[in-house]
Length: 261
Image 1 (tube, helix red, strand yellow):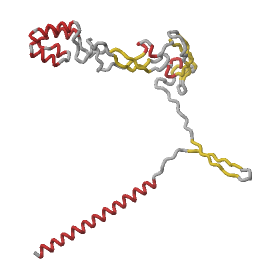
Image 2 (cartoon, rainbow, N blue to C red):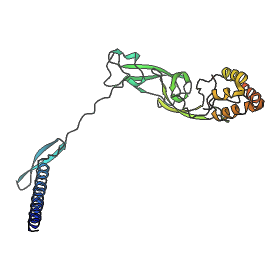
Image 3 (spheres, rainbow, N blue to C red):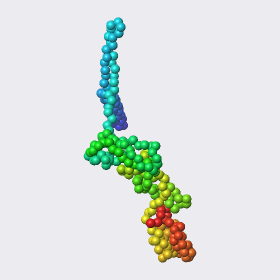
Image 4 (spheres, rainbow, N blue to C red):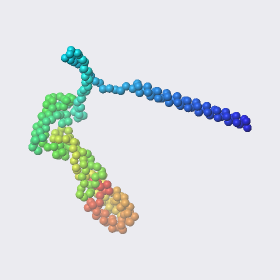
């Protein structure tokens, strides 16, 4: 029993010594980290803007002179941004509206041809006279013919078979070398008119030949109606005849709401 008690006492002492050493090590480590953070914060230098200063000497009526320190900020010149459509070395008369500063006459008569005085923008390097006279038809950019601008494609969520016909908002950009009044980027509301590649002739042929098995509905992406038609044997022939008529007149179309090719 005495041996067991001695062993327990020795084990207790070892554990106490271990905990004491661990606590001392942790305290030293925390002190070292805090001192390192303080040193790094002291050594950190804040970047200051470059400032010039002027010193002037003032003389009072009593004959005493004093120096006045006046800081002045340094102004950075703004670089000229050259549009990507303005290549260096091109003929000045071939440059587009993005490369020119023009004085448009917004009081011209709509539809009449008018002349505009333009100057090549700074930073654009071209060959020839930088003073240009261009002609344009007096109308705003959004009033141009559709052949003079390009618009983004229709969104696939726009249903074309709804009544009344739905419209979507398209982002349009005027083509190069086309002069017009106002903003060259504009929005237009256009009718939904897009297709996914479904052919009316194919749908009609499938409806006549294999319509009793719902193949025409499968082709158009109408899976629920196709399964119902398949398991009912084309509604005992009645559903098949009705679908042939509806597809022939164009009443039934693709499930995604697009138009036939």
